Length: 351
Ligand code: NAD
Image 1 (cartoon, rainbow, N blue to C red):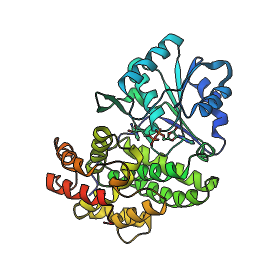
Image 2 (spheres, rainbow, N blue to C red; image 1 turned 90 degrees about the vertical axis):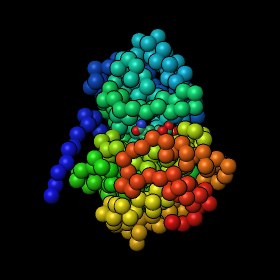
Image 3 (cartoon, rainbow, N blue to C red; image 1 turned 135 degrees about the vertical axis):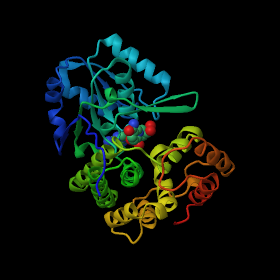
């Protein structure tokens, strides 16, 4: 019997090769006239390209976005937006840049237009994050949800394989957890399964042929679906564990997701057989955990924590931290269970 609640989130999506040409119209549509463009230091040229398309509507380019939105970076960006009298932010880049846009929106309510260039999916969620004293706080607030999202697959062609692979698996992780979320629903499950299928197919091609726009479109479409599912469901063991590893041990975000996902899925598989069958079906694999591991290998993502900067001596503390606060998950989260999972992930064994 069907019994569910589904909140739709109000955002406008403009998708397609060349969609960036519509950016100025989308700014005008919001009634904005003083745009602050956000990007990372290494993404400055991409930020300038965006600004060039907006002409006199731009009041500045702020190129200091970094991973996990340090509170001092957020405060400096909020101050810059105020100083320039900005009435809109265009966040052009990956989850780090969009996260900075959200921090500005959280403070002053400025509307954000997101132009995503990775597969992280943040642009479709009302989830913000701020890091202070090595601890990342997250929360949900409708004010931070970008008003408009411009997905232009041509912008992702420059994304190197070393970023495309892990970033795409990060998106798949949103879909996987949406399929077994306690507050999931049939609509997000449809989106999640299709998201996994699109990402899996698209990623395997873009790794070989980065400028294949059909494959880039497929992967970015999957990332949209993934972000949209993450925006409306609660996350479980996988995201909580990645949050701990990224925040407390300073491991790279997307890479951690790629390593942990097959193991989190193996941990939960007995407790969520229907979700796992859908994951396997979308991957065209025999089982979900093994299929995700094989996909990570196929797209060139690292599959062992020891290869992305984790120290063996930190595994006990990671297990302690990750099991400190209870949260919803298909299978009860135990300290011993998580410690064993972390060991497998550290060694990089195929589940
Ligand atoms: P990122 O934004 O740091 O980007 C990764 C790297 O790719 C950067 O060096 C960036 O400059 C580069 N890059 C981006 N676009 C490029 C392009 N088109 N061509 C070449 N290089 C490009 O990493 P990410 O994985 O996209 O985002 C990670 C952050 O996003 C984390 O802080 C994570 O917590 C957050 N996140 C938040 C949510 C949410 O809902 N709030 C969801 C997913 C991720």
